[in-house]
Length: 167
Image 1 (cartoon, one colour):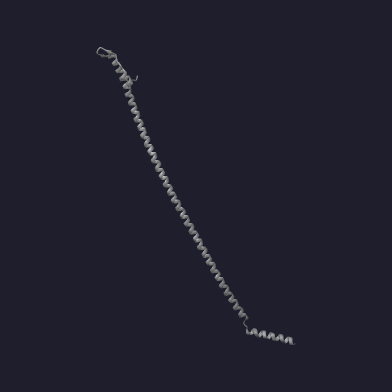
Image 2 (cartoon, helix red, strand yellow):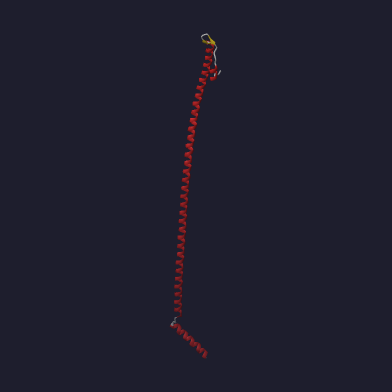
């Protein structure tokens, strides 16, 4: 049974000689005590439920906060990893470029050295040709220089030819 505020305000007891009917008042008081007891029990149950719900809400809020913190730290770690990876990638690229530049420079140096060696060999060849020509020329001149015996032999031959013609 439930008793509302309006029921209490509108309740009227029958009158007796010395006031209200004792039995009606007692009966109403019992009903009212039962209603108030039920309300108190219900209120205690609701308060317990509220405490449990508040505890659950607190736990959920702590979990939510923990998740947010975890997400924030994870995002920070991801950002840090990206920055670190980017720096490492740049270092690798810079190192590769430096190695490539060094290799190209070595190639250019070797090419210049080869050109220099070729020029040196050309000069040596030219010198050799000049010396060989000079040597050949001097040998030819030596061959062309009259040898006294050769000249006597040629002179005798020419005289013999002349004599043979005259005869």
